[in-house]
Length: 110
Image (cartoon, rainbow, N blue to C red):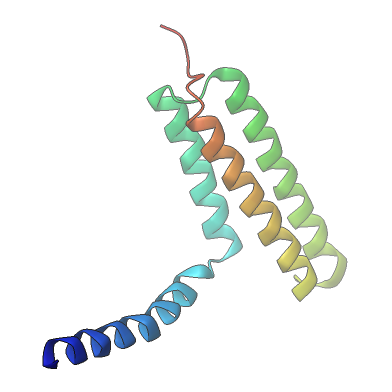
C-alpha cells in the first residue's frame, strides 16, 4: 500500500511538471527557429537523406517564409500576435515537411 501511494505521488509530480517543461521549451524566437530549420536542411544534404530536388524545394519554401516575415515586420513595426501565430504555423508545417523528406528514403543515389 505504501509503495502504491508513493507511485501515485510520483506520477502526480511528473504529471504536473511535464506541462511546465513542455511550455518552457515550446516558444523559440523566430531567428532561432529559422536557424534550426536551416541546420536541419543542411544536415540532410550532408548526410544524403535529402536529394538535390528536395533540398532546393525546402530552401525555396524557407526563403518564402523569410520574405513573409520581413513583410510582416515592415507592415506594422513588428510582429502582431496573429502574424506570430501564422509564422509559427508555417514554420511547424515546414518542419514537418523537412522531417518527411529526410525520412522518405529518396536520398541521393550513389
